[in-house]
Image (cartoon, rainbow, N blue to C red; front, side):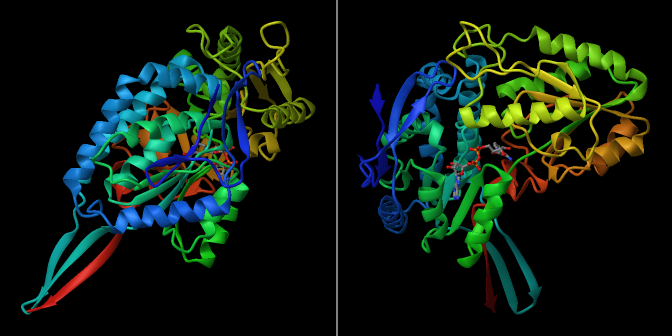
Length: 479
Ligand code: NAD
């Protein structure tokens, strides 16, 4: 059993609070590790030392150094990928197969951004015979990266890799429940000499304490936040006081739209898989399944059969399809939505906490499907963040689009049809940062992702994802 420390100024140190947080295996309730419950004074030290490393080194101006540092980190993670995946499963509960996907995604993000580090291009222009201008891209300075627990590795590297590639110093604040896996990944960076000592810091602790102190600190230039819409909104208000740049990757309530000409089995099974992955605790979960009325009842049968075939259990088993819910609080929250759905509509399958020897010490909910709900129901409108799929019926393309856009969220969507023209028409009108046609959850380091409406501000990944971490400067020369 390990106690993880904060990583500040190239050194592992305890928090000044002397207090610890617990990491717990949500499948068994067993203790996994301690992490530091840090304070605003720890944040102060981290900000000072990251600033010192940033101004005192060539990190911001030496793109070759940054590229090789990121490549070395990727290589170091690769060597320990299986061990890291096991810890991720233990701390978060997700199936080991999914944990491996996360680690591979982190490695891929580092490698992609290593190449990008040497491609932070601006542009030039000549507006008059006697004038020449250029637009430079510079690092922003000190960035705080605040992450959630649901995909704690991939989402960390989705932001961290471009942030470092662009030449910034960084302070990482992981979610309370996933500090151990984050510390193990930082320990691999600590051994790489290409990273200037102190350029990256890790502080674990409560969002309300550490996260808040980072948002309020005047020397933190940007907050890159992935988490709930409620916290994102509050954080944005606080950041406004310091006119601080924010990038927000927030919640979702994503629809899959299945038309009558779609490959029905593939469409329904993929949609269901996208929701039950990570027990529905995934921002891009296809949590709403909208199906044309002519194939609706068949779709219900396919979805029910799929949900009932999922093997729910401890994530370390290779056979597990769906693991536990992260915490008691989240479990109660999900069960509350299920009860609301039962009162207002129909439970097609599931709808209860799993009990029995295998489940009693953990936090498991049966894969659940609901329907017959009003579009205004909170079960349809709000992010449940659990294994609860809502099925809805539509009659026309127009109605499908209207229903798809009916929630405050706009993170992602799926369109299922063999008609290319319809696919493009619908993709254009659905308000979402990512629209998949005849597929779902295909994310790439080179493809921007992010939210419309209450799902966020700014873009992660791709060229725009890198540029989020840069300032733009116009330098003008009179000739
Ligand atoms: P959360 O908002 O509770 O916490 C996210 C992070 O913010 C944690 O590190 C937490 O400690 C910190 N935090 C909490 N209060 C804070 C405060 N007042 N100031 C600063 N930081 C604070 O979210 P969560 O429960 O960890 O994650 C689930 C949510 O994240 C869901 O809504 C999900 O949709 C969203 N999410 C979005 C994406 C995306 O890419 N859009 C990806 C994953 C998760």
